[in-house]
Length: 305
Image (cartoon, one colour):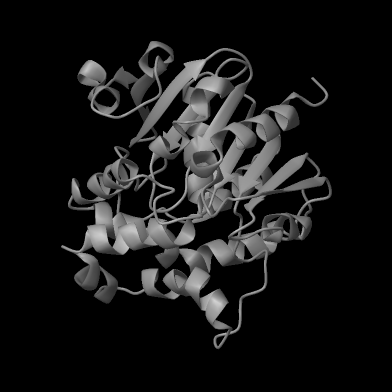
């Protein structure tokens, strides 16, 4: 494990007051793969796994409060942020194995997991594939391929608005050709249309996410790689869903995006599901409603402790 020189990934970012007094940016070597994580706090370990096209930075608003009772690990999965971007390994099983190894390297044999967006694919795989490691699972805005039925090809316009990128992102080369040089337009549109309002995710945060992709010549390809691995992830999840999860699950949806859909998704795969819908919230609960989301998550994690 090695520290990032000067912790430049934190010092150059807009962060809550006192953030760098608590959290440290780290690069961790795991089986030949370098993963980036921001860690801090005290107490039971809590792993935060972000969605597409974000980095660990998506959790910045909730990390300080969570760190009062937890050792927080906000990770860039392979392909994201400052983590390595190999050509393969973007199926949920491999991503989950990466993070299980990361937590071992950080000294955490057992931990709770929170996943958002495509991070829920990894979080679900962690809980299913490594049940001895995961105590509690929370998912935000979860649509997990292979657990939920595939939507019809000709669905309503509202469904297409929310899901069209699944097909686009799975293309082999054309998507990269169309997006390269237009990353701010393409990814900025995602945040502007999926949040409660076009400015709910501030411009400075969008810049962080876009800059993380364009800064590495492999970044754009890696951002699509999770979707290109969906055939493998779907087959894995179909197998996983044959054994229902028994650990406690919190499923959070934004009222203006997935709503109760997150809970409906997890009820297909788990026995003990608590569903919550956040008012005035789109697809990004940890950024749009950080205070309310933190309260809900903290209560869930503290149960039976």
